[in-house]
Image (cartoon, rainbow, N blue to C red; front, side, top):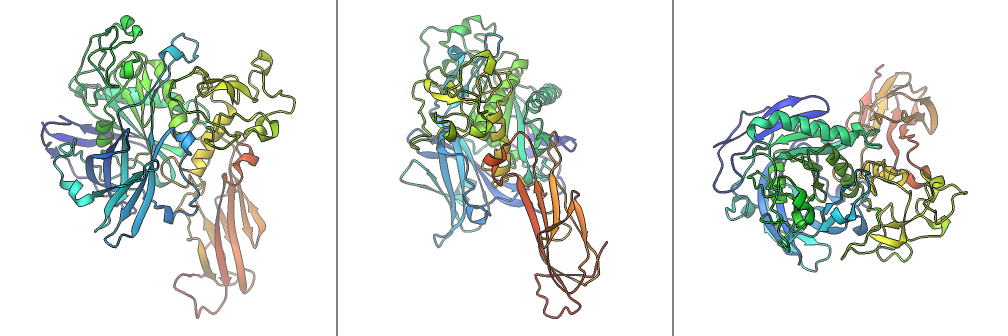
Length: 600
């Protein structure tokens, strides 16, 4: 059976791409696709590769595809601020793989990093109150973990990968990977969209929603389920406030059968994390589908790591299929099964149960903003943290610091709030220092008594909400790597830099502004030589009064009350500058300067 893809829906915020896959393994697939018009502008050729890393740091290539990417892949050396690195080791709770492209002269021509989460996370509420049930929660360490590397296609280069914890690095011949039929998923080569479904991939967080356990006839159901999951996600602040900072696309992959595997209960069953033959979790005895095994595209199964509600998938297959839409930053996978459950980690996995959508909100807090869990039930092998000695700094919403003036979220704490803060009802909703966090009952503290990172269905606490907003602006969790810009890059009517004008001739400088959908309007100031000439507006007309040099600048700032300025520093600020030379004589103007005779 052939593999085909087509676009079936498109609007400004939601795009559906259909990918019909006959089989992922077991022979080469035939592709049949109507060509789409190439995207104009920034599309570039890149290598999209899926790798697995073992517990000892050994890396194996799984699949390779040459793709067209709409967004620019940024090397560290090309970033304006090289200090803008991905989340710290404590926030990642996993490895960071250093990625380099090396030419024949052993010069590094491209460098980046990829975060590889250590755990597949399952955190659930089973009592109807939203409180995380520790007996049903699990942090599973798979035998191997999957990650994706995307690098520009540069002739004569090889790929070098090194986990940050490893001494040695591994090298891969890109030309060899492209034709290696021995790769585990070499036979699966999904067609790549010629036009990106993301309209502004370089200045948005791109979420790709995929599905498993949907037969070909259930595509409409998948579309509806994906829309419901994203509606739940974007109904939760601060995602609701910054919904337009994200773009969402869907990718449909039909399965031979509907649903997910539900292994039969067997006392003492203990196999590898993805064991599907049996389940040793006592809760499986009440699962009405126990013993049901189905054939799906991505092998979705309940009782991953012997936890009934933890839904695992073949992450390598998912990420290989995602090459069809290579500009994604984060993946949500919807499993066509109404049983409550899901998982987090490198991707968010959700069942179609209405309550499972909150698992996605919680898990995105981990994978996107590096937030820590705020419940205190111990979990073996989970590493502790300390902000006081700096050996392993804690997540943004966890600390062991008890000196009021040194608490990292002290800007949120009222002077009348006792430190540490009792869990009494009188302080409910107040930011303070509440004991019990990050799998530790004593000695570690969280900002508020209740939070989505502690109880599903609760709002994110103020500190967690701020961290998500700051991650949007600071970057480090996808593209743009240096954060989202409130001044849309490339929208400037006149490129920032030198501009030559005639005195007395007006010139209008204009940009497109990205305003938070649910927040206050941006603070906008247009200045000439450092003096504010206009407040507000996406355009400004300047008329040089006489011969001379002038500086026209645009400064914007997000005025959100959800972020403390003292903690944000300059993260909410963006600017553009034009150096204007007003003269009647244009002799000697360099090729980098624009000669403008006036434009109203």
